[in-house]
Image 1 (cartoon, rainbow, N blue to C red):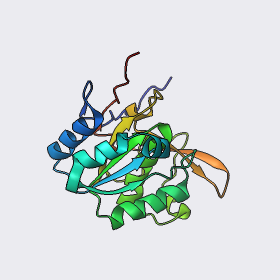
Image 2 (tube, rainbow, N blue to C red):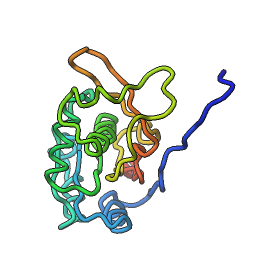
Image 3 (cartoon, rainbow, N blue to C red):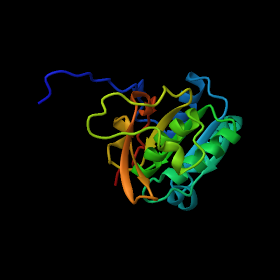
Image 4 (cartoon, helix red, strand yellow):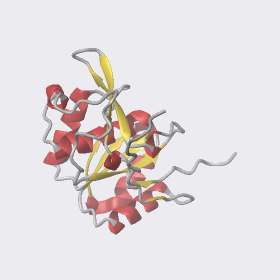
Length: 191
């Protein structure tokens, strides 16, 4: 057990439940004064349900782009690519809708946006690992909201598991403000 240290509590504002995700998300975008919402969504939800379309409709002119090609395991390369797409779209809020991969991708995307990370190597100056007690990342100006579709719990922590494909290595990156500002659990229909 450590005898001394610091614990930074994650920066979450609230959990909104019992409401359609599309309505709750629009309310949160209004609350945060977000004008350009970038969606990172599950391809399955985007192509086999109307959930994502409902979100886009509710956001209306606030929605700027949707990315649905999430890799099974979040990679540095994809994080840099999606961050570039979000920056090009002028995103001022990133929303993850889906499972753990979508949520982890959104967490690392906001950090890649903050640090202008353009490729896999761009993450190299931000080492994480045993003994690292303070995040080397700056606080991100752009934050995220999570709309989880599974019960993996990743939305309730301030870390993302990211794969460095060059070295075939999974790394944990963290910062207290990687935590979503709001979590909106999708209501599931009762049988």
